[in-house]
Length: 111
Image 1 (spheres, rainbow, N blue to C red):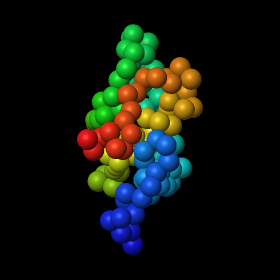
Image 2: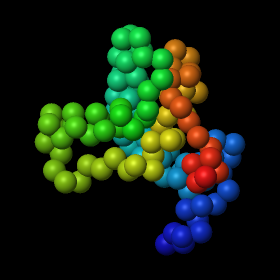
Image 3: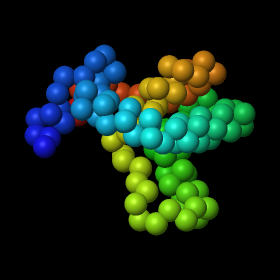
Image 4: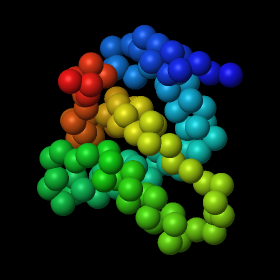
């Protein structure tokens, strides 16, 4: 069982706790289509001249699209806590999207 303190353990330089990094990585391993969809949406925005975009917008677009287009039942969930992990991963691995998301460190978000 996860203690409340585990949720806020020290993270690395990106400000995401190790607990959420592990959870997001496990989710990603089971759901690689989430990453592909976020990259596709970000590139659509980039092609339209968008320089910066919030991961929240893309995350909610994905939720909407899958709600309308898929027969997934109530079991399919996109955890809000994974957004920052995906934003950082995309910027790290997709050179054309390296600066598309504005990110905050954990201590900046709390201020």
